[in-house]
Amino acid sequence: MSIRIIAALAAALATQGVFAAATDYKTELLQMGEADQAAMHRHGADKAAQAAVIEANTARLKQIVKDYGWPRLSIVGEEASQSAWLIVQHADNDPAWQREALALMEAMLATGDVIPANVAYLRDRVLRGGNQPQLYGTQGRCIGSKLWESFPILEPARVDERRAAMKMPPLRDYVAKASNQCKVLPP
Image (cartoon, rainbow, N blue to C red):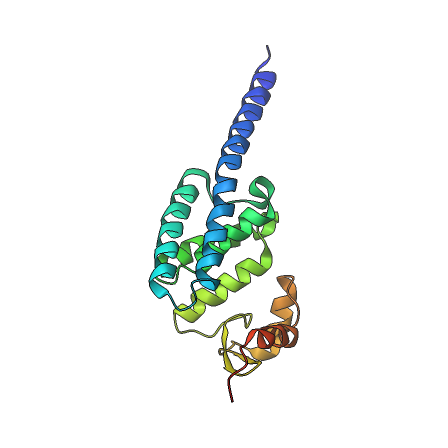
């Protein structure tokens, strides 16, 4: 057998191993994402329950990333990739991990193996955690019934240009959508 054929077979087998492993952790990522969302939405004010889910998910995602690298769209698909991003996005108690994950995700932008908007959200989260102005206007707060405002943005006149580069709608559209999520305050 020629060296080229052996090398091709070895590469194919290695790739199959990666994909086999990916199917194992893809299901786990989906379950972790569901647990994350349940903790954020169903547990409401139960901060201890939220923290426990975030801590467990963060520890497991770190191990997955150590073993396989950041979950790539081409390997785990959009839903599992989204789950991984949600987990790191909510890991505010571990800003070093958020920065590490952000670097991994940013490195994958050129290959298309990560959702650009997720990179933008995490970039803003990391900047906000470091008390710096954000780039994309994704982080903010409700300031009244059906009224959301963004935290400070670096060069706000260029925010829509940056958002477009990350395949995101204009900030005004995002603000309108986020405002609809703000609870109606009792009279």
